[in-house]
Length: 221
Image 1: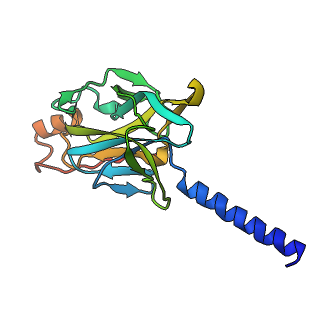
Image 2: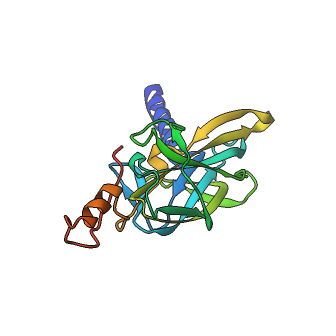
Image 3: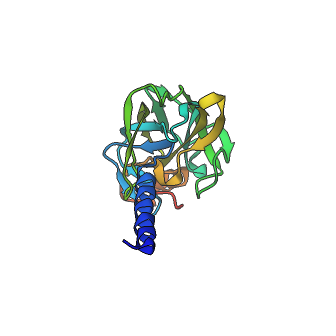
């Protein structure tokens, strides 16, 4: 085997190793809704259910990660739906409110808007013993990690958007900020939302003769 051929083959083997490593790399944080559909346009897992499980997944990637602290789930609504009569949302059976307004995460066509910052326990990614999948379509791999399972119930709002971020604590106490990539976030789109105030007024004046109009809103990214 010539020296040049050794270089080519060696380079190809190194490329395969690097490619495999990239394929196996998982985000430190992900969001996922079992039974949802991945929307390639918004790059989100989207459900039309009004009662569903939301998973906040932490992975031990990179290998130096010990746990993720200060884990925050952001639940956002459309700005125009703040104070919408009859609308509600519960997380694990407890109601939450949308008293915050601003941009707690990079905008990605969602913020600024009204949101709730829901604090979660630490994700013990190196010791919990959970197996975490890569939920971005077209990617693969699993990793050790930890998962929070949240039951979401809501009504009235036309859509909800979920983001997550936290602080990774690594070996030697080193820390760094992390967030669920926007390709690994989640949304809910209610097909039977309560009409917005202006629509309710029109219904009251008889300008709409049909009852039970179905609406669906998926935020543009």
